[in-house]
Image (cartoon, rainbow, N blue to C red; front, side, top):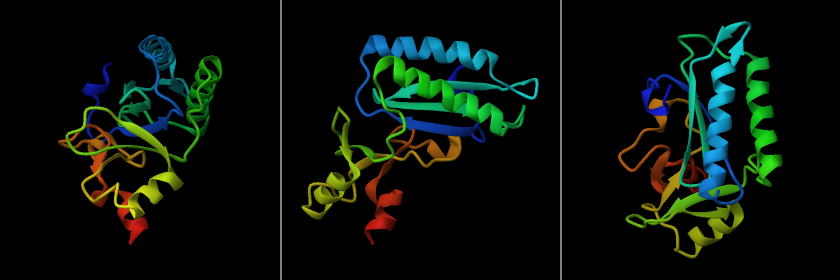
Amino acid sequence: MKFDDLPGHSRLWVHTADRDLLPQEQKLLMDDLRAFLSNWSAHGSALHAAGTVLYNRVLVVGMDERQAGATGCSIDKLVAFVRRQGESQGIDWFDRHQVVWRQPEAEGWQATRTSEFWAMRKAGLVNGQTEVVDPLAATVGDAESEAGLLVKSFDESWHSAMWS
């Protein structure tokens, strides 16, 4: 299954790396992820899932829970897989203090610690139209936007509510 084939109601897990992945690291990760997902199950039921790497540092796994639902054990297996991948490649996938962002029309994405991002907002370097990756999207449908998967403007993201 390809990530683009997942229906909008599919559940998401989003992990942000503490650095950009090199092309060969992305290929290795995707090969290993496909192998893992092809055997991922919950209580003997195959889980219909796919994953992708976005913006050179965001790992997204989606699963169609209408086919079969994830359990605590199956989620633990996914987390263990991501942790092993990080350990083998020297990547921290569990640092929740990374903000991936870009100015509108910019080609490349930047990653900044949350505290630095807020300082940039205060200094006016980040504005309401600055695009951010929203790792809080619960479903594929929630993650879709014209700007790209998981992409929202600052004003549409959870950052805006925290800034108010």
